Length: 605
Ligand SMILES: *[C@@H]1O[C@H](CO)[C@@H](O)[C@H](O)[C@H]1NC(C)=O
Ligand SMILES: *[C@@H]1O[C@H](CO)[C@@H](O)[C@H](O)[C@H]1NC(C)=O
Ligand SMILES: *[C@@H]1O[C@H](CO)[C@@H](O)[C@H](O)[C@H]1NC(C)=O
Ligand SMILES: *[C@@H]1O[C@H](CO)[C@@H](O)[C@H](O)[C@H]1NC(C)=O
Ligand SMILES: *[C@@H]1O[C@H](CO)[C@@H](O)[C@H](O)[C@H]1NC(C)=O
Ligand SMILES: *[C@@H]1O[C@H](CO)[C@@H](O)[C@H](O)[C@H]1NC(C)=O
Ligand SMILES: *[C@@H]1O[C@H](CO)[C@@H](O)[C@H](O)[C@H]1NC(C)=O
Ligand SMILES: *[C@@H]1O[C@H](CO)[C@@H](O)[C@H](O)[C@H]1NC(C)=O
Ligand SMILES: *[C@@H]1O[C@H](CO)[C@@H](O)[C@H](O)[C@H]1NC(C)=O
Ligand SMILES: *[C@@H]1O[C@H](CO)[C@@H](O)[C@H](O)[C@H]1NC(C)=O
Ligand SMILES: *[C@@H]1O[C@H](CO)[C@@H](O)[C@H](O)[C@H]1NC(C)=O
Ligand SMILES: *[C@@H]1O[C@H](CO)[C@@H](O)[C@H](O)[C@H]1NC(C)=O
Image (cartoon, rainbow, N blue to C red; front, side):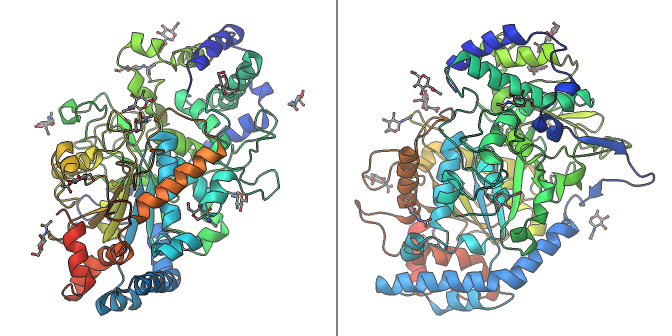
């Protein structure tokens, strides 16, 4: 975002400040489609599902989806991946030990893989995309590198913030290849996917004040139907409507500024279960997370420099449900009913762009004081929201969702008596990689590929802080979650170069925790000029900049422990060794062959 936005928003403020300027009669097609529908709940029904506090169970929808995928789709995916690794190994005159092949070929032995892709704005969306591309069996270069095909074997894919932009856009567009996702499908049709459209900034779409004001006015108008229906609207709703133009079907460069298109409004996250690829169990089960701010929280568990305490519940959005597996809440409602409260049933609230907007709502970070918020880039838009939709008793810097869990777990759930919950960016408790959903024991995840593009250092690279925060949080919930040991400090990561090359955690430790394959944006690969460390707030990119970013990420994901500017020829084999290692242990087989050396080299715990 550029400071120019502030200037034009202030001009906009002057134009718009008539509280009745936006009435339901003036709703655009997007405004109509963004408005949730309200009805009385059928009497005697409860929307809330309890998962149990220590041995959480899954929804029927998820259970059915993942087991069908594992039975019908993954056997072929694993054998394709195995063939790719073997082909690459043969070219490097190395080979996989027999047990890797046995584990991947045998029903009941195969590992359960989850991939988590971090926050960090467009930087994270591109870095995550670049790593997924390097693991994608549809990309011949990735197949040639011996890493392609692993993406197709995943049971789960989680994303938060910038990673949720990648995840939601990818899923709702029908899981196209990464270049076609980012640069657009050119499939034609008003409701197809037009690409990330990074020639437009997220808020500052034009330097022409009139055009810019009209754009912001359009966004405000699009949330006014939701307000008129009695829901709170905040910065997160306006944010959702601009994100929708980049990460949801229905926008092209040509119609970008035209207010008469729906621009993705009305597309709900729960409706993605109807996509043919979902019906055919062709994609990993997608999960997005958000954090929460509460007046009842225990601030002594805030990681220094972050905003949300680690002891607060983490909320999960999946296509079937919304809620939290954390033991103090351990409850869900159907995703399609998000926004419901008491005896009021709501649909159409769970819009795909709103889910991504919640997960990337880092605006609350600007609110260290009323004056700081006012002086920040969102100060003017907060003022307009406040003036246009007068509301009291809520935060305008967060996403406000009616609390469906009133009265649930009153002794352990901090917001049990609150009628609204305030949701914010999934990474602002310091855990920028969405690992928590993959630690839920009922999901039985054996191995996690953790993609980390957090900007921790002065030059916007990663220093391992996110994994440290996850380790700290797991220590607060020892019966619910297990996590392999990671260094206690960022210095521990940097001293051993753990962010500069792929690192495995948990090789030598308890197998009750998943094994972690950590791929971080810790520095440029192979002596190249850095291109992957752009600021979290950079939102416009040319196609050639994006291509350079993706190509460099491809090298980061395929270099292994490089020697000079030579990639480790054994890296694809080592990756496969890590992927199967928990499944190997389950079979009671010892590591052998190339895997012994691989795990010595790549494991940090
Ligand atoms: C899930 O756990 C809850 C709470 O323990 C229990 O009431 C419910 O029966 C369980 N459901 C299944 C399918 O096991
Ligand atoms: C989005 O558009 C793509 C084509 O560009 C299509 O395959 C996909 O089904 C659409 N998704 C939704 C949710 O309509
Ligand atoms: C606005 O002006 C700045 C500075 O001249 C330029 O870098 C930027 O590309 C312009 N933005 C748009 C959307 O035209
Ligand atoms: C959008 O529709 C309105 C009402 O039909 C019309 O006045 C306006 O010119 C249209 N805007 C564009 C950009 O086509
Ligand atoms: C807040 O968290 C700290 C650190 O985990 C803990 O020692 C303390 O008991 C908690 N306070 C309350 C009121 O729960
Ligand atoms: C919203 O407007 C009211 C009335 O002018 C004012 O008292 C309040 O401080 C404003 N709130 C914010 C968050 O700006
Ligand atoms: C800023 O944060 C405070 C709590 O620290 C909250 O009460 C207030 O509503 C927030 N302001 C806005 C505009 O959300
Ligand atoms: C990217 O990293 C290089 C090397 O450390 C540094 O010179 C540059 O300033 C960084 N760029 C950003 C935007 O942080
Ligand atoms: C970390 O990387 C640097 C630069 O490649 C190298 O000089 C150093 O020996 C490495 N340190 C360790 C502990 O591997
Ligand atoms: C990232 O890059 C931006 C722009 O160069 C810079 O202002 C910022 O300080 C850098 N570091 C972090 C941690 O954001
Ligand atoms: C495969 O990945 C490479 C490396 O990023 C990229 O240049 C190429 O466009 C991709 N090809 C396809 C078909 O996706
Ligand atoms: C793991 O155990 C092996 C075999 O005992 C040992 O060689 C290796 O150094 C250990 N690695 C770590 C990181 O503890």
